[in-house]
Image (cartoon, rainbow, N blue to C red; front, top):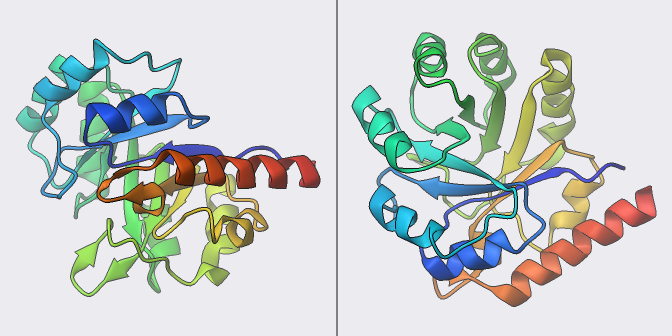
Length: 218
């Protein structure tokens, strides 16, 4: 199998960004919405003066943002992807894509109508992040959803020619079962954290599992 795209989200310190920038990830996520991992554009700008991204792309995560909020972040940072994690409509996502010229990914909760929602965003989103919904919390829960639905999500994304990342509770101990389904993208955060920071050992174990699976399957 081809190596899936890897996004490491929730980088909240110089330590986190330095560690993940040296990893095999393709995208590094920064959260600009209410979260324990929330960062400010000014502090990230300072980190980037000390960190070589090594060609990795930056994804900025927003929840129901005003245009001014997005503009403020993009004016400070070289953002490649705007990830929308709230109740943004297809029209709003399309307008953000046209206005800012970055890729737009729509995060969607795993539920009965997720496939239908993916089709609704077909023309306005360049990619999808399918995540867990736990009670009223969407995303960032550290819990995985029922992965039996993953093949259907993969097929839908391929038919639409869109990127698609699976998120929620992914780490080195369960990545093998997800990789067996050959997802196009994997989005992880808490699964490689200890004491609220990215952990070098957990990240190394995750990368080793991915590399082993790709090598064996290839």
